[in-house]
Each structure stands twice: as structure tokens, then as C-alpha cells.
Image (cartoon, rainbow, N blue to C red; front, side, top):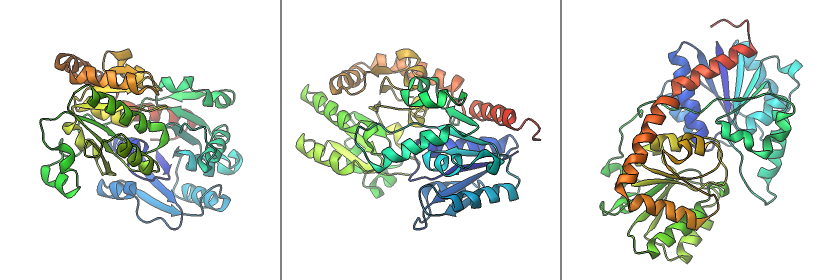
Length: 383
């Protein structure tokens, strides 16, 4: 079975890591996945393209005018038919808009979309328009996959529920990292991250993700200020890049946290920093099923996370990590201090989290569930 995985990627974050894990697992079980990396004509090599090549995963690149683009869609669909693709699988709003608005009679190949999550903003921006187009396009795809059952409660899915059956397939990652567990001191020095982890005896609160509004990193920074004000000595490390960097840098300065909070920027294979974290924080206002949550559970790092999306389910309603209400710096600070002040609690949570990860959130289980879905859409497909 040949699958075209379509993604327009700006980094190597949750959706990209999930796709790479899925493609690797699909090849292992005998399928023929191809990563179709789309982007505008000015785009250079993207991190996901480099990672796919290094992992010897089949890759094709398409560069085109951004936004709804009928010629770009026709070109991609023609390529899918020429190569015998039996499923087109979109990962993100740009692929959904590009292909979902094409009438199914012209598309001819079943279209699946995995919904990794939406941003959360009350401001009208270009992203607001894209997400409105995305919700419209999703009404016309053949299957919409939510990466955790918790996403089904999102009111943004209301229109889709009335037109398409939603499918839940939990995200999964490989049982063991693809590279060394820990980033070396030499690599830290080269990446300007050595100061962020020195001295080693100071606890490190860590998080990994795109610097975007819905990640709530401004709230995490304010929570960290509260922690320091209690007399606890700690540092905060945020790994990722994005549009909120300038705002976060200003927040750090205003709260007197220079030298205590470190924005390390984008790093390939950022999960390798997990071993350096004393506790992993998720401060998002909206999520699907964060890949970094699974990576923290795999690395046996205690987790404090907001009660959104699929997170409560993954953390077994608080038995595998501390859950706090979104939007509250005070609640987040209390949760983080509970871990920092109680080693026995941290150990108990991480043991339960690792067992839960191993049993429920593997890339093999994820890949098998997608095969079942694909075969429902192409019942006569071989392979």
C-alpha cells in the first residue's frame, strides 16, 4: 500500500516527529510511505526533509505559491496517481486546504487528515483565516483523525462532527530514542546551551515546543517567577523557536529573570535534552496529544501539564503526572513546586507514566490503527 504523507513544515516539532515515527513504522510493516514536503518557492531545505533523508525515508518536495492553489493541488494529485498512491494523508492545515477543497470526484484518491491541534487566539490574524478555511476543508476529506479522544470535546470540531465521522488514533513514538539519551556537554557548548544547565546541582524546569501563543510560555515564565519568590533555586529552559520570542524576551526582562530563564531556540532531536530536565512543564491552552509529553514519559521525567486536550487521558487523570488548570500561573507554580519539593512523589509519577507509555503509546500501535483506517477507505487495496 502506497501512502502520500503531505506536510508543510516549519520545524521539527510534534506533527513532524509523529509523521517520521509513523513513516518509519509503516516501512517496517511493509507499506510504502512517501513524505511529500510542500512549501513556497522561497523555501530552502526543511528540517523534516533533512531528517527524512538521514533516516532513508522516501521523500519528494513540492514548491508552490502558498494558500489555496488549484494548480499546485492538481500537480500533487497527478503525481499521486502516476506513482500509484492509494491514500493521501495530510498533516496540517496547509495540506488540508490545498487538497480538501478539491472535489472528491477530481481527487479520486482517498484523503485522510490527522488533526494535531489548532492554535488558540482571540486576535484576528492570517492564521485565523487559515484555520477557518481548514475547518471548511475538513468537511470534505474522507476521514479526520484526532490524535486523542480528549480532542473530541473541542467546540471547533462541531461542524466536522455534523459532516464526517471522526476517528481517534492516539499518537505514538518508538520505545527507545533514535539517538543517544542525553545531549553531550560538547554539543551543549556548541549550541550556546551550557550556561542553561550549569551548575548541574540546580533543578531545571524544561519544556520543548514552538514559541506560539497557545503554548502559554508567558504563563510558564510568570509561574517560574512565583517559584523563585518562595526561595526555591531553579532555572527554566525553553527549547523552540517562533513568533512569540520577542514578547517572551520582554517578559523575562520585566520580571528580572535574565540569567534564570533560557530560550535556547530550535534544536534538532530536542528530546535529547530530556535527561537534563528535573521536571517537564506543559503550559498550553490547547493541545491534541503532545509528542513531547510521550518523550518525557519515555525518559522518566516527571510531568506537570495543563488539563487540556488528550493530556488528562495520557496522564491517567493525574496518576502519571500532575494536572493543573490552563491559564493559571499560580496553579502551574504549585504543581511544579510539588515535584521539586517531593522526590518520592516525582518517582511514583514517573514509574506509572513509563508503564503507561510502554503499554499504550507506541508507534507500532499507532501504525496498525492507521492501516485499519486506510483499508476501510480502500477495501480492495492490496498490501
